[in-house]
Structures are given as structure tokens and as C-alpha cells.
Image (cartoon, rainbow, N blue to C red):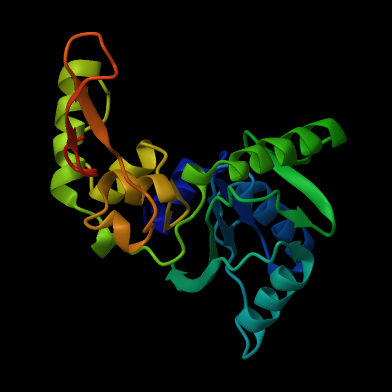
Length: 239
């Protein structure tokens, strides 16, 4: 969405306006809040009344702001920072992605977004969120597959699965979405990274990443499990 459109809509759960870089502490806190929820965009040079006041951009303005963000967030957050001109005035935009791997702190404190406000998490909420994140990390299938790239994904498998799931399970995911968006909705990605489950389910060659992994199917004659009719080799695409 264009900056002009964001200003027109106004502040929200994912959009924040700041009049100047002098509010850098509040900017860092909002970055923590955005990272701990859905992500968002901060526009510096716009006041709360949607008026474009602009900011003065010097040689070290962006670098100084970047350093303040890095030095006061934990884990360190690297947002996309840029400058756009509107009505002949400079606006700094800061795009923050959601960070689902940990609770992001600003000045050693956790923040969250509630409507158009940035508020401090209470201790119970902070502890609960930490436990939820760590619980997810315990499961192998939900962990990031470090070497995996999108070129390793068999798009035909994804589309075939989606088609069958929509027909038989009434899965409500639009088939016209990009592969990346489909995988996100299936919770097979963490940020921009593919999970182990994603590679095992839809990888072109899962064994390239997990030599020991496989699925073996055995068909039995009748109900006697001691009499196997035949076995099938591991094949993720058709089992």
C-alpha cells in the first residue's frame, strides 16, 4: 500500500505516525509492539491528525535511527527503513515484520499493539508468550529447515494438495494465492523461512535434507497383521 493511502486510512493496529525522529524512543517501543504481533509500518514526519509535516534528512539521519533501533531491541530487529517524498516533504518509513521466534524487547521491556496504541505487556502475558514460543520450538516439524529454499518446493504438489483438501476437507484457502502465501496459511513457514514439515510434505527431494526420513506403507491380507501382502518404498509424494 502506498504511503499516501496509509496516511488517509490513519493509525491502526499496523500503522503508526510519528512527527519527528525526536520521538525515537517511542519509535523503538512501537517496533517491539509490531514485531510481537502482525508487523506494521511507522511513518515519521506525519502527526496524529494525518498532517504531513515532514522531517529534515541529514547525512547521518537514517544511520543514527538504525543504530538506535539495533542498540535498543533484543533480539535485534532489522526493519526496512527508507525515505519517500510527499507534498515536497520527506517522510521516513519503517517497515517491521512480525517476529514469531521470540518476544522482542525494547529497552529491556516487552511491548504489544492494542488497536492504535503501543502498550507494555504485563509479566503474566510476557511469560505466557515465551512459553508458547518455546513450546512450538520443541517440535521438529515446526522448526526452520536452514538450507531450504523456495526452489526446493514442488509447486505442483502444493496445488494438488490444496485442490484435494478443498474438495474433501473444505479447506478455505484461495487457490489463486502465491505458493508462499499458501504455505504461510498452512503454517509451514516461519517468517521467510521454510519449516521441516514444509520440506517433508512438499519438497522435490526431501531426502536431500533428511536422509533418515521416510514413510513405509505395508498392505496386509485380511485382518492378520502377520501376513503382509507387500510393502512400498518411502515416497512422500504419493503416500
